[in-house]
Length: 186
Image 1 (cartoon, helix red, strand yellow):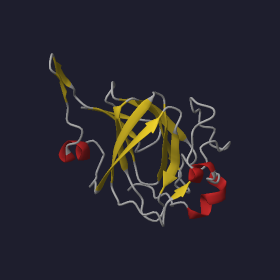
Image 2 (spheres, rainbow, N blue to C red):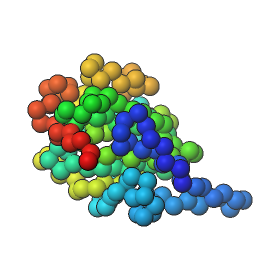
Image 3 (cartoon, helix red, strand yellow):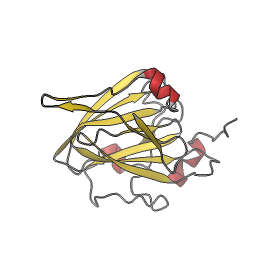
Image 4 (cartoon, rainbow, N blue to C red):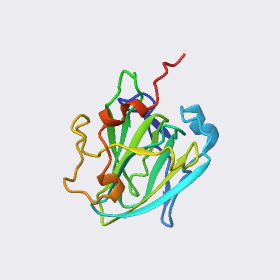
């Protein structure tokens, strides 16, 4: 596998080895020791699976009370995946990185704890699976507006399909006091 650092420290792209032949393909989607060696520590305690239609945007979500790292991959279709550094005091606070994840490219994205995450669907259907380093806790979950002008995320769609909750998400500035604090490594 090949692991690629992004412009945001800790957000990593994983290109697994895909073994193809006339029958199809095989790949490891996770191997604890190999991923740990490349900066994806785990442990992962919950797996999630979503299926969405074209134009759907999910996010931006995070759990300040129970921070989750996420290892994301797509098993059908294609999504524009986004991670935003929302750790108060971080040198990259408010910056974002995006990647296209698809069932064709097999690329995975690791979003570390302290980052907001979201994605929009680019194909008729997309199925996304992701591993989480902590359990889902709706009492600690918050959202940030997908179209917050301060973030200026270059989403490839202009009028997404949103849940009622995501439609009402506040801006980053409005939730800043409830965000996790950045702690320098070392």
